[in-house]
Length: 146
Image 1: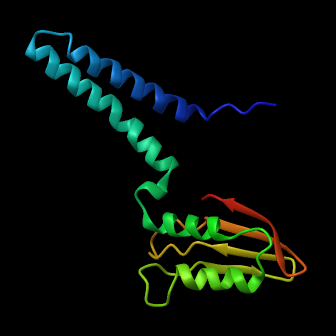
Image 2: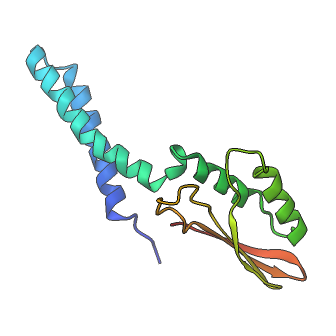
């Protein structure tokens, strides 16, 4: 079973390809008016592609996502609950710029964190790290994007 990329990503990549072709064409055209027009069209074509790629990879522009994904990547299979909590304290110190994730589920066999939106009006609050535990050690981890 194969998985095709989402159509929006295909359109973003297509926009980048069209922009590159137009920018290459700029060097072959002799008239300045046409060069300026091609650069403007390339910029207009590239802008939506950039927005799509940034929306798919929010960690490129938002430190909350970078910190949260660092926390996820720092969690290793076999870590104990105490080691996971120590990692959270290390990456989210009390006097640091980021607020720590909320613990939504804290049970014997599971531990779930939700990213703190840091802004009460923000709708970004559904990024989740879901951990499965067995014998008080992490046996599986899942990152659930917003």
